[in-house]
Image (tube, rainbow, N blue to C red):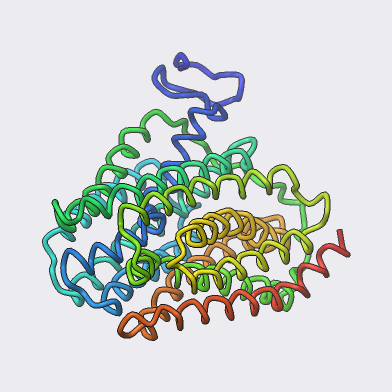
Amino acid sequence: MNSITQNTEGQTLSHYQVAPNSDIARVFLAFLATAGLFYVNIMPALVDGLIQGLNFSNKEAGLVNSANVYGAAVGAFSAVFLVKRLHWRKAAYVLLATLISIDVVSIFLTTPESLMIVRFVHGLVGGVLVGIGFAVMARTDYPDRAFGYLLLVQFGLGGFGVMLLPQLVPTFGIAALYLSLVAFSVVTLLMVPFLADYPIKVPDELAIPAAVNWKMLSLALLATFLFQAANMGLYAYVIGLGKEAGLSIDFISPTLGAAAWIGILGSIGVILLSTRFGRLKPLLISIALTAIATALLHYAQVKWLFIVANCLVGMTWAFAISYLLGLNAAFDKTGQTAALGGFASKMGLASGPAIAALVIGDNHYDVVINIAVFGLVLCALVAFVPTARLDRAQ
């Protein structure tokens, strides 16, 4: 904690605020950037909860959660134009309070149509909050460390979510899921006052940004979209897949929780490797391993294969998406292409479950697996050219 003076980092802090570049601040910022999109980390629990708690069909449950993420994509894109104009702290208070209200309202909705509308609005609000969180994190001295904490919070708490929440639905109904989101937002709301002001850093007006290679960037954005869509389309239904294969929820939930925690190793791997071996080999190898692990889910009835497949996907998903987002960001230094990469990522996260919802029908999980594998192979092909070009340039 700091006194009401300028600290060594040049910011004026109230006595209760934490140093802007401390580890505590990074944890608080990670919660801020996660609160608006935490439902993505517990997506399997939400989809299965709607099916079990409200008797929604596979299609209806998938579309409700897709609407949530589509709203987030629109909100995140809007945030690109809003972050410079908004007072981030006041906006965070309003947005978090709005998210809490919408989650509470969602508890009392029982039709797919009403939930699609309300969850789209929730996503819209949450997407703006995520954009604000990312913008504030970018104002720290070492944003990469802040994003490292972000992954730690998302994978760590997401693991707890998919492990514990599905077992609460039979007893407490769908309310257990939405109240978990309320709890996350309330905790985040309590953290916001302790953060420093993080004023906008004025760029060098004389600096002329290099021209963006839009053709290569378009391929990188498409690869990001394909990777996220392929993974989330299957992940949203992975609990149902396990049940259809004859596995119990008592086995499925801990497996998914462990897979989320193992995903942290993937993000650590990116930090350790960085670009010392370029981006092409690590990216293609990780996408290939994701495709192989995804294909193994055809044999989900074999318990050890279900464990291996999910844990491997958890690790390679975190590893590959870090490189893909870094690939997008590398096309300019202003942050604009990084923001576009985040938008492509969210569009993929929303479109995957939507596509899966349209083809899954009466538990056709084999079709969803095949589409996911095809999407991952296509992602590797699309990513090859821009990644190789960027490696040569650097």
